[in-house]
Length: 100
Image (cartoon, rainbow, N blue to C red):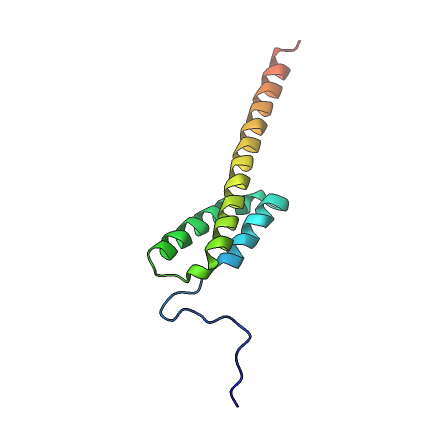
């Protein structure tokens, strides 16, 4: 008697998707550590290109897109935070120099 696997079938000949990893990186970049955002964005973009080229399992497209979007948002917030920190430092230094 043959039992069926509880796991969905993998597409033969295609690389397995990394959608779960990319989604975890994207969510963690929003909640815990913003520096993970660019990694989720870059990995997601690369995997979506491979999925579109037919080289990677398309089952992970939604997870990959979600993680990539979270990574994009986190990256933008990271850049804005850095810009505000630099501006704050500049104003603090110029204010300290200008005050008698």
